Structure formats: structure tokens, C-alpha cells
Amino acid sequence: MSQHTTLQTILDGLMKRYQERVPAVNRILQLMQTDQLIHTLDDIENDHIAFRTLGVPHLGIQSFEKIFLHCGYQKRDAYHFAKKKLDAFWYAPPDDRFPRIFISELRVGDLSQEAASIVRSYTDPIQSDPVDDLDLDDGAQVDEFLHRGLWRTPTWTDYQRLSAESEYAAWVIYNRYYLNHFTISVHNLPSPYHTVEAFNQFLERHGIALNDAGGKSKTSPDGLLIQSSTVAEMVEAEFGDGQGGTLRHPIAGSYVEFAERRVLPEFSELPATQVTRAHRREGFEAGNADKIFESTFSTQTGKASASSSDV
Image (cartoon, rainbow, N blue to C red):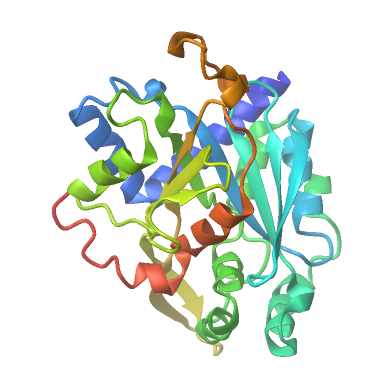
């Protein structure tokens, strides 16, 4: 199996489960077709996908990135989020048909002793890097790995304790390596929907709730990268009760992001038909990403209970 075929198998598996788990994805895609923003799903460029990890021995970025480095991705810029206790890198794809990848990691050692101990009670039984046991040329095996539990099902009590200090930690302890979001490149859409501002209006007109942390549109200092995102949809989650039974509670799942990468100034005179990825703003912006993370936080999900009422 070729490297690109393996990668496509992995990406297809991620998107299949993501679409099943995040109803907003199919709602948005259907709306885009109904309103003729696109003719087929192939008209959509996936700007990037994102994953969350825990910075503990044998896991975290140093483990997870092996999957995509093996598939030809190249590690690029580092980002740091002091308040949220996160580090991250983005990875450039081997071919423009594939999405960029953004992988973040919680600095577990920077949490309070109680919260760090809770996280490690789940991850300490992992005594070797699980990615090293995979055949990274077997896309189906990698896909299965990304969607199975690496540790025991968390208790509701532990989830709540983590959430009180780090909603990121709580999200990962339950959701593990589930795809956190995929991103629609709006600059490829037809006018007037080819800007984040206009696309946000389109979404809200159809009742889609947007993350408004830092404003609904998050813009890089150079003005060339504009991003927005939906509020994560709630999923019914099953937890342990600490006594051998189970409890069910709604928690934040995944969401959808939107990105507008503007043409770099040196290519401003280039005809639109000749513009490619290479001519647009590349990479990410820490200030934008910091607020996008909050799409799964209760400050956002609490506002979205009626978001789909008229969709």
C-alpha cells in the first residue's frame, strides 16, 4: 500500500466517525449544497484537522506525531498557550490534496497536584508508546487505534474535577484521540461566501451557533488568517460511577472550524484562477487558536442549547 493510500485510509476513517458523532457537519454540508455554495462535497477543501493529547510518558505529541510523520507530513512551527497550559505544533501535508494537521498537548505537570494525579491514574498503566506497536503502513489498523480506548473509562467524579481546572484535560480524558475538528476553507467558496465574515452570517442565518470567544471571527495580527468555529455539540457520554456501575451525562464533543487564508501581499496581482495554497497565508496563529480551543468549553456550549432549532 502506498504512503498516500495509507494516509487516505486514515483520513477517511477519521472523517467517517467524526461525521457520525458531530451532526453539525452534515447539517452544514447539506446547507451549503442546498444554497448552492457547493455542488458536491468534493468542492470543499479541508484546511486542517486537529487532535488533542496529554503530555505524559509514552503519549503526547512525541507519540502521536509518528503516525503522520510516517505518512510524509513535515513538522513546522511550535505554539505555546501559557494560560491553558498547552503546547502545539502544526504539520504540513505531503501533498496539497491533504489537510494540514494541528496537534496540541496538555502540560500535565503544570496542573495542580490533584488534577495531575487524576490524569496519571489513567495514563500510568501505559508503560510503552502504543504507536510503536502499530504497523504504520496499515491504514485500517491505525484508524482502529485512533478510535479505541487507551485507558479505562473515566468516572464522572474525575471528569468533573478535571473540568473545574482544565476543560481541555477533561475533554481528552473522555474523548481521547477522536478528531477534535475539521476545517472548511471558505476562501475557495463562491462570492459572496468566500470570507469568514460572510460565511458566519450564512451559518447564523440557519441557526448554527458560533464560538464568540475573542469575537466570532478571530484574525491574525497580519490580517491574513481569519478563523471561526461552531460551538461543540453535546454528546451523551457514559462514565463509571466508581462502584462498578455507569452514569450518563452530556459533555462537549467535537466541532467544525472555518478558515480564510488571504493571498500574500507579494501575490496580490495574481489572477484568482492562478492562486494556489502556495500563494496564501500559511501556518497558524496562537491568538486565534487560543480562542478556537474554547469551542468545547462550557462558556460556549452553555450558550448553544437552541442552536439547531431552525435548521
